[in-house]
Length: 376
Ligand SMILES: Cc1cc2nc3c(=O)[nH]c(=O)nc-3n(C[C@H](O)[C@H](O)[C@H](O)COP(=O)(O)OP(=O)(O)OC[C@H]3O[C@@H](n4cnc5c(N)ncnc54)[C@H](O)[C@@H]3O)c2cc1C
Image 1 (tube, helix red, strand yellow):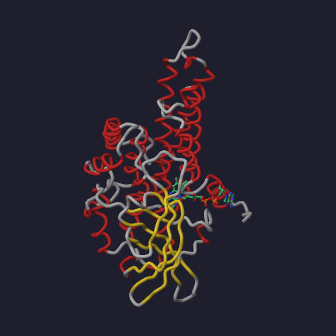
Image 2 (cartoon, rainbow, N blue to C red; image 1 turned 180 degrees about the vertical axis):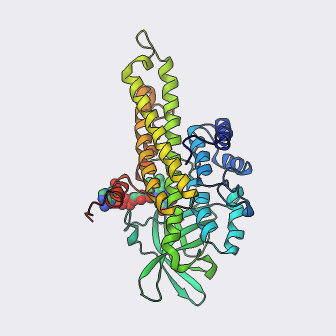
Image 3 (cartoon, helix red, strand yellow; image 1 turned 30 degrees about the horizontal axis):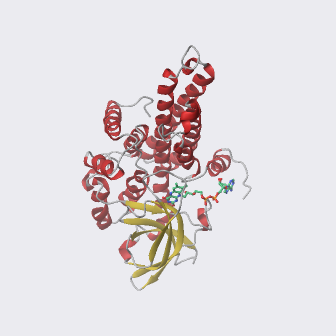
């Protein structure tokens, strides 16, 4: 793995950064989405034969990080091209690839992703959304919660369960559920978040789906699911690093100018050092994110799993600390609408909770890496 970025990656980073700066914090999500798509940024990870850029999660994470650093993150990149696009590209049928990938790549179609359930939460082994066969069709029933962007998406990739014909046990399977399918309803959750993307509670009541709605092989459910969850963690790390960088840049600008004694407040080490620490933490988190993306793009799903978890953890924590210190640096202005940093305090917490919480990553590392016993 290269420890410095390639010239191509640097060029991509600076081109996306220029686009992000043109849109800035007051961005219009739809305009930015379609502009980024036209420039090929949203489908940069998808195969060229289906309209993508032929790159990987390494490139897609650069795009999201740079948009975030400019104050205009596109949250749906985490789900549409990264999870859904990857799962369909790797495991979808030829028809599903032709049907979905060109639209996901050029931004004209979007797919949301729903795994979280109210009674399962972090314990996704406990999900109860179930698909049963009815002739050639599937009937899908269950509930989901906190699912992002369902209103913006043409369809949602729903994680459900089907019965294993040999053992009778329920195993995870993925279904493409169109937004307006009969029996598929959504209720917006009132979140304390200032974001263009909303979260929804979903009810699936005997939603009838054709056989082609099942993505990939019924018997490879778990493998397919993890193929999508590693990119999700890497992209959440990119989202967090971008946001942390955005907040930190505002704080540095402010600390250079604001003078209440003789020197600007940035000259006081009590202000400068925590900002320097926040910068170091974000850089370290990015290194781990790059490692995870590199392993994933090289086809090492197992190696990428540990690195993606660690990257998501490191980036989430670095983001929360960077935002907290940035708000503090602005004093009272840290809490004004004009400076726009206070709302990031809530937004930064998303990266600590989703898609897998800080504690669940610490559990994973305790058990998988350190070999410690489980408490649950
Ligand atoms: C803004 C936002 C967007 C989201 N978008 C999506 C989406 O698009 N699709 C989707 O499927 N989901 C989405 N989610 C859901 C997200 O993935 C979940 O919120 C997350 O997995 C945590 O689940 P939970 O909220 O049920 O918390 P719980 O599982 O109830 O956990 C609550 C607390 O208990 C801790 N905890 C639980 N079990 C343990 C344990 N064994 N050991 C130690 N601590 C434990 C957790 O770390 C957490 O701090 C989103 C969430 C948010 C906030």
